[in-house]
Image (cartoon, rainbow over all chains, first blue to last red; front, side, top):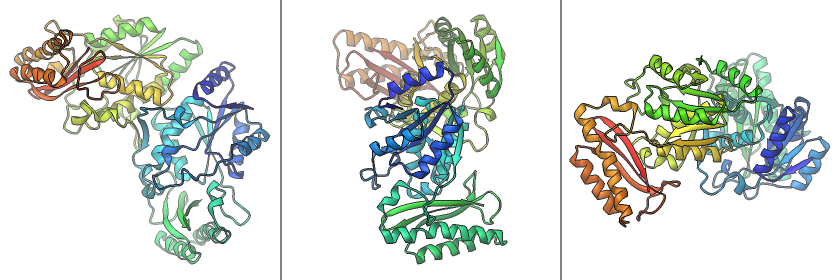
Length: 278
Length: 278
């Protein structure tokens, strides 16, 4: 497994790989890998000849009052895990190399980035699209794998690929959950034991909503009220609960096939996201 | 010469060309070609095996009160001219193909796009970077040629290429001028004969400024005042006259090597730009 620490050496490796006509896969991560990440790596491993995993805690997708400095990091452990997955190269660029002095260019989904998580994190998705486009241009993957927990992110990146005429196939991996149902996230380590227990309500409540839909409930307001009540009972402070179309992310008054129920909820200071697709 | 009218067929042609390992050159234009464009085409012709010229009047780089609807078009004449230059393919995409419904992604130079022309045309360069990145991704050129008349545009595109980790070499072509010194521009046809005569002051005044620099004048304010006086005498309404560093586009108080004097001036309703590099 190659460990590549600069943009220029990654580009060199990609040129060599392309010469041998090997298909390239990319799994972009911010490191501190958990089973969710590893499930994406396994999907990618099957779909390409040369698999690159990037580890980069991208500063531009964090807001000024967010957890960039505290974001958990453990590169040595990450590398050990990736070696077991038979990854070909791990790309760990430095911040100065990705955003040199005088850096000026941003990529932005104008509408999609303002919805859902974009309301409370107004610059987040601009940071994501910018860094992902940079990674795409550096690694030149044929396929790239993203997790469904960050559903809006996957929608925005798919949109970017169509809009900017790129030839990359995006594959999404299902949410991987802890035994209690809490969606795997590097941020779960911020939770106290009682918060972690309470946070399992997110998945439980979303499953109840899906059951209600299957029983014939269609009224989005009613479903939202029910979710709000359940989550608030467990001391969750709701950032948003939205019922939207899975592609446009536009609000829907009535539940139907392809409706996405997405939410962001604080437990203490930790903001968790989760979703369910009907 | 191939005339390619859709993104998908252009992509097919590019794939074929890449298979034969031919280097690709791109000259992006908005059509209504003049000698300035053709000089860029000739530069590109020498630097690549497969030369693509694009003709696309890009709506997103026009402001709401600008001349999109009136912008001159003559595709038949353009094609005749390009055939003589031994262009391999002319890419003439439709607006709906470049910006389909639900189009959402923009590319923006955050700082550079707010300077010079960006002050009075706040969305212009976002339109330019977005469409140029799309054209780059569709045509996948090794080299691309831009004119020095749009100096700020070339600076922004160079910045975008570095920032987004693209492997495209940008070549700039000198400004081509009419016999009186007026910089060639598709917009010159908007000028009345007397405006056209008066507009030659732009180049004359810029040349005087350079002579003054060569004589030892260094004070930017003094040079600006002199330019303003000369242009105003010829009924030019000044949008801006700026004395800046050629790479950062930041204002300079003293003239020096690598100083750019750039200006935008209205003659009647027609906004003309010109510049000179010291």
